Length: 237
Length: 169
Image (tube, rainbow over all chains, first blue to last red; front, side, top):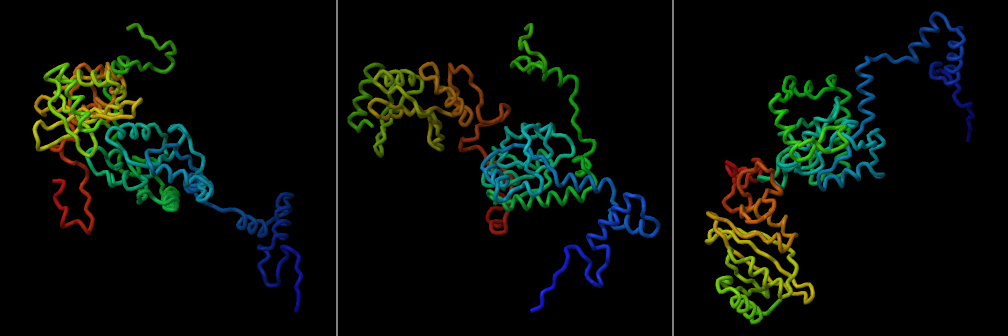
């Protein structure tokens, strides 16, 4: 039996020299010294530079480094914990760093049923998140109110935009991971990061009137909610 | 549990204290229930409390539609020393669902009474904070009453499209 011995990275006969590791190393050294000229320099640039648009590069980076919000509504949150844990291991996609504040997060996973009373709270958390932001509706309850289809629950599409629905009751962790991969594809393909641009909702911002703001601050004062910085916690009233 | 005879003895004792307080007794499946007049429910619970039933694990409501009076408020009372249970049931109508609160006797009944108010609309007079507890405060109606519509979203699947069509209309 014939045994062939080859130096690692050496060019095989008939192989393009640009695949040769040693040749590329030498070319890089020559380029840094300024010895590379003409066609050789052109070839070097063609081999080592990838051109793209800034938008695409940013989208690619954004899809690979996500900060989900630490947020659980019901039993689906248990499956979500599994998705972060070692077996499914969301860290492979760069999505593992859960943020405890909506202002630092850019993905909210509605993992469970949303009751009529909870819906304004969820919507408020969503509004507090900074753009670009995305939402996953996890499980049957959140997408369609599921088995609790009655007066008490509301489907999440009714009060906020959802990017990916993951079906299941609850979804298997693999299903959630699949939903996350689909969301990553969506993020990397879309050119409109803002949710109002994505869903034709520009101009639907709700701006409170002066009258409403005055009424709300009066109500806040009545139940003892004080503005930030007011450490005394006691008003004149 | 007091047996059927023991339940009658307790009922007699209560009637000695207040002739109008006890409307009757029920004893079914080893469960003793005293039917109390709603306006005298505080007397009944106070007397049972003095007899040793010093713990109320639950206050809950029932809708007995179509029976009248429709609504029932059940107080499950427990004697922790003898490990003995007895229930007090008071029936109120939907036209005037009022019953005295027992929050001053049992502070733990506070949230239970609010939940009965939330789900069945029974107003507990003398309660310090008679508000809804589970549903939003601007919610209309009492959802656990039998005549309250189920609500929800119309969801049709291929297998139930014929059978369930129009359920939510």
